[in-house]
Length: 46
Image (cartoon, rainbow, N blue to C red):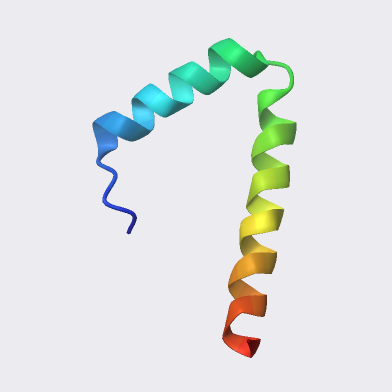
């Protein structure tokens, strides 16, 4: 989709886990998912 392979996704996930921490990572993922969902539903309207 964005030209990112599986290995790159794993590296990004590990870095995010180290920066954010394991307790806040699910909340961050939920927030980013909501932003992405809103962005995808609004973009066809533009």
